[in-house]
Length: 145
Image 1 (cartoon, rainbow, N blue to C red):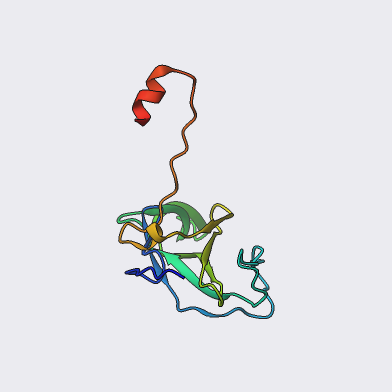
Image 2 (tube, rainbow, N blue to C red):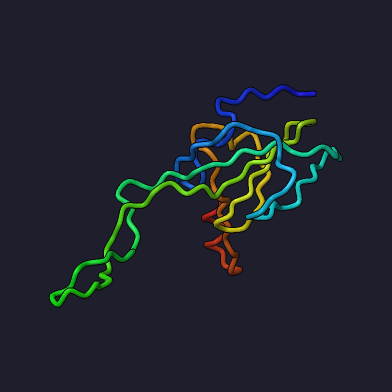
């Protein structure tokens, strides 16, 4: 058994955005929405995982399109397009095996399941691996080395 010391209990940053994580709690018996991904751990544990949800903080100055109601000239309500400040979105769910303490995160934005490694717990957090296609050229090989 190896002991890995980590600074954060879950990644403080996810794909470049700060995350505020709730505490781990026992999994609820039923999920209404969203349905959880398969939660069986590789260690073979049959126990229900612990669950924590995470809210991504918006990037500074991030806005999104919306509409607002305004009174028109003749007393009728109109919908006008506008930009409003973004707010934190709770779309990350961390699952921790109660036996081996392995963590996995379900990213609802991309509908992907990630198994966390020691590098994900540092101040840089978890970053999506860069996937590059090799076109068969010599310059692609030189850039990678």
